[in-house]
Image 1 (tube, helix red, strand yellow):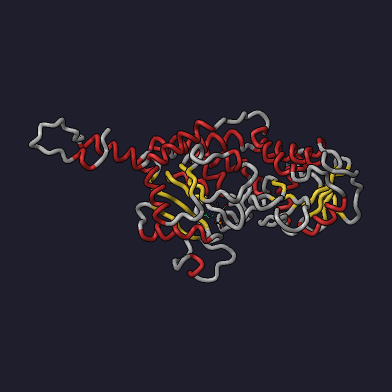
Image 2 (cartoon, protein in one colour):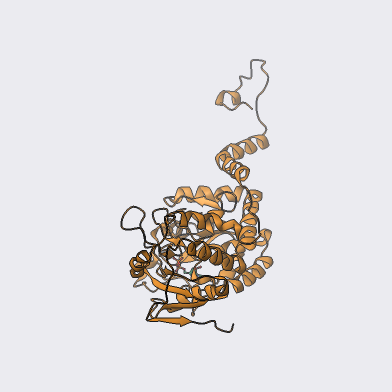
Length: 390
Ligand code: UDP
């Protein structure tokens, strides 16, 4: 199809064939070429994508292998002694779970122990150090190589990734979740139910975000919302660090919104916080289109989720113009947007079940135990953690 300016300015006096487009053709062509790059991204991503089998949690094994490859020379007792300063020491001896008496965040430890106790009968003797802070502990490029388990990291860290405590309990406590965000098993059901009440065609044509200012990467979306509330509803809520309106970009803190209510909106944004944010998995279950900002910070299930297949990737450096462009792409390509939303939802629904989390823990700890070059002996001063009857 001719494209250049001259094709549209045919001299009427010369009897040339007319190359003029109809109005409809023009709009169609402009829309198509405008979004060519993004359409190509989607096409290519889908071509390269192989869905993984829902059998066991094999979908996620890749990360276990990759993380443990860094310790393929084996782990000595001295490595654990050095790692101890970076987290909480756990031991499994004769199918009993023991732990340092003190845990920096008791409910986070409980959220971790819930899963380990579920599989304790299948685990051999071992010991390991779990970091319950948000931030990873083992930089790739300096310091000694210690085996420390963390829930989130970037490529610059060697921490061994484990499924976060919040799948059971110990997530951030906010006014609507005063005992802390947890019970993923229950959220799966309640968000699914709300999503069914808000199918794609009924959802509000708005971008939505609620959360606190745990990372400044969130600011551009808040600014767009202030200027253009018909396009974006993004507002900062309070967190424990809030001191004044300056911490909510000079607006009063917004009321917190339950994760189920996010399903009322077509477009949902996810941002990192201190590390990965626990929000991401909930957003997908809404069957809304997820905009995932930044690819640096991961949780254990992130690597199998692919940009343009399951979500719209947004560079963490994106300015307001870039965000608006990506939002307009979805608004003008509703079918494609809905398809991405469906694939994202299906992935989380099929591959992030409670049994996948239990399965990941089992595969992770069994593979880790094979690396120990000594037989762990019960250490003094640890307490036994027993199963609760739940
Ligand atoms: N959250 C929520 N509704 C809100 C604000 C936050 O459900 O209105 C949840 C959010 O999904 C996240 C947690 O509370 O998992 C903490 O959110 P925040 O933005 O404060 O910090 P983040 O963990 O994302 O850095």
